[in-house]
Every structure is written in C-alpha cells, then in structure tokens.
Image 1: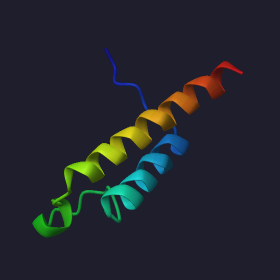
Image 2 (image 1 turned 30 degrees about the vertical axis):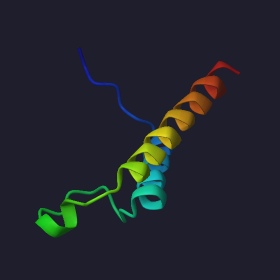
Image 3 (image 1 turned 45 degrees about the vertical axis):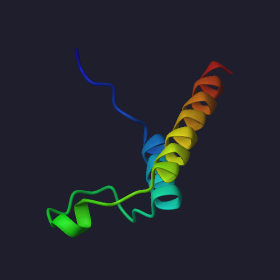
Image 4 (image 1 turned 180 degrees about the horizontal axis):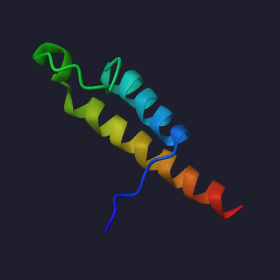
Length: 65
C-alpha cells in the first residue's frame, strides 16, 4: 500500500507548527547532527501534536464542504 502524500498546504502547516512550537527552523534533513537533532520540552511536543491534530481536523472538515 502506497503512503499517502501530504498536500503542499499540509506540509507548510507542519513546518509552521515545528517552527512555532518546537523552535525548529526547517524540517529538511541537513546531515549535520546539531542541525538535525533537537532537544524539546515535553510540553512543547504536546503543544505541537495538539496543533497538528487540530489542523488535521480542520482540513478534514474543509474537504467535506
């Protein structure tokens, strides 16, 4: 089974969530340890996951209209 592709809008939203909640400037792999690995507080991870979940819900209901 093929992995579903995320829309450009969804990819932008995920990048914005990472920037705002996790202070991660880019989700691109840079192959430099200190640029690709980040320490994040659990409350920031929770906030990012909640934001992603809510964004998915909004996207789901938007598609139904």
